[in-house]
Image 1: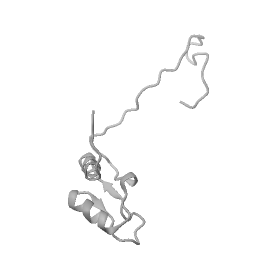
Image 2: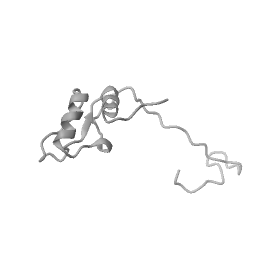
Image 3: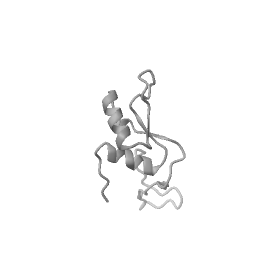
Length: 93
């Protein structure tokens, strides 16, 4: 999207060329790598304990020496949605 605008089609060389953006292909049904959810990170033990009570399946580092302290980690879409719900976010379509 940040590339210079084309004025000539690179294939057929016509001057009526225009770029049509498309949606990237992404599989949201499952994740292959963990998702670090920094946007809902917590900075104190009480908030982490409350979050773990609401979302027992979602991993959260509780060791203050850990650089990931207070950051929920989702292993799949279900965990991600559970973490967001536990943090007070609501999914709408």
